[in-house]
Amino acid sequence: TNLARNVLMWFRRDLRLHDNPALLSALGQPDRIPAAQHLYPVYCLEIPTKKKCGHRRWIFLLECLHDLDANLRKLGSRLFVVRGLAPDVLPLLVQHWNVSELAVGECHEPFAVARDNDVAQQIAPHGCDFKSFPGRTLFRPQDVLARTGNGKAPLTMAAFSKIAERLPVPTPVDAPASLPSLGDDAITALRNALDPATFDALAGPQGDFSVPTIEPDGTVPELHLTTPIPAHEQSPHRGGETEALRRLDAYLSDHARVTQFEKPKTSPAAFYPNADTTILSPYTTYGALSVRTFRAGIDRVYRAAKGKHSKPPVSLLAQLYWREFFMTAGATTLNFEQMRRNPICLQTEWKCIPGETTRESHPDDYAMLDAWAEGQTGYPWIDAIMVQLRREGWVHHLARHSVACFLTRGDLYISWERGAEVFEDLLLDHEWALNRGNWMWLSASAFFHQYFRVYSPVKWGQSWDSEGVFIRKYLPVLRKMPKQYIYEPWKAPIAVQRAAGCVVGVDYPKRIVDHDVVVKVNMTKMKTSHAAQREQAAMENGDSNGGRN
Ligand code: FAD
Image 1 (cartoon, rainbow, N blue to C red):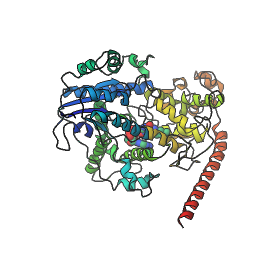
Image 2: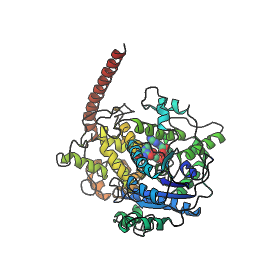
Image 3: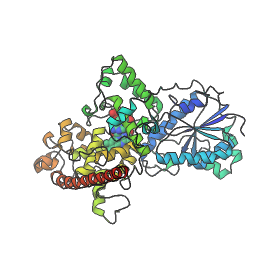
Image 4: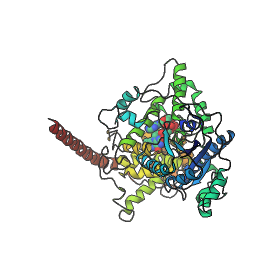
């Protein structure tokens, strides 16, 4: 019933103008239909805040929104940040702005798909179509699944790559040079149509749908994030498409680094601005950087090198494939985020399984979990990584390996779901499928089964950084500890501890476990659980073969 073609662009995990097919659809591309008369760029901000998103990730997200707004304004448009849940607020906007199409970048997580279906149903009675476009991933999970032959996601990179190599390489699209105008007075239209309380709740404290303000001390009053973050504890990673494209160009300009990239050879002890990997993950997570643009950039460097470059699974391009791998598994596996009723996940008796034990029933187990989360395990390598994570919101992949192995099969035998929750809070780059999938990997619950290959919380860090530069940076209390004790301060004679100004048990915690002891106990548990899993699988295969014969 709408005569005008008015488009509402609902931004989610595609906070950018470049390579944004949903946004371009408002211009009538690629369908060669007339451009929309009006375009309303919208972001739905859940208030009060989602509990699982930590303070620094909020700041990163808001910075992405500020940058998106600024870039839209350069084209004569702007971003409307609407306070509320999408299924509640979008039908109101669609109705009062007379919107005929709601355009989105496709999301694949089961919970996001359910939400999108809900929104599509709610707007349909207002004569508005829900249209989704690719761009969040290189390949659509459904397209990968269609080629596995058994309806299940590939569980190895080799199997995934075989399929991926036969799928077309997506071509990124250009950023728009101009955009359709906003309605004459989009805000007045809403103010006139809604009751004042509803309008105020949607429009935010300035009454103008602007992005919440981040104060210089890092507080965000509107989101009740009121604890100041001292300058030296603010994350060095600034959000936004502009910063994302700057960092991508900077990284790709060093051709040798791109062509010789081998993930296992990059150091977990190197930190910003001299990290060994790209630190583009926070940008790909929020879509401030398109993975398709990222890929096209890598391909250009590879072509310039005439095909001489590192290869999967360790190359830079392969890192993007790992993202696709987990996105596909997450989109298509039942109960992917938990151990129970998850068909690909090892079942074992972890401590602190959500829904099965509580802080009250098992206080000692949760005290261990807290010590890990707060960087108080007494193992400097582990604690320094957790401090970096807490402060900067990003740590290197192999650092994630170290702390994830420590929490689960290596040392504490605590449920990987608890580790994933802590990461969800602290990581700027938190991505549901990647986080849950990698936690299953590190705990040898799925994808990876060599549970006996445990990272030593001492020797492994030492092999990268024998001087302990990384530890000294993030744990200043150990700054003066001689290098032979920096990874094992409890071994330092008390006189050495005193001279270093760091007495173990007073200035820095005692070890919460003895790695050499607990790892043996844990390996026995792992062995039993893996054997049970194999037995179960054999039984199921046997049964299904029996059925066919
Ligand atoms: P680079 O090495 O420069 O790689 C380039 C891009 O490839 C990354 O930006 C990322 O998009 C992708 N990528 C690289 N490694 C992986 C991987 N193993 N799996 C999936 N994608 C990958 N990554 C997230 O983006 N979000 C998460 O929530 C997340 N949780 C993790 C949890 C655990 C326990 C572990 C072990 C890893 C997790 N990772 C996660 C994967 C990986 O550690 C990060 O993507 C990577 O360290 C980001 O740094 P980078 O951008 O410098 O990576």
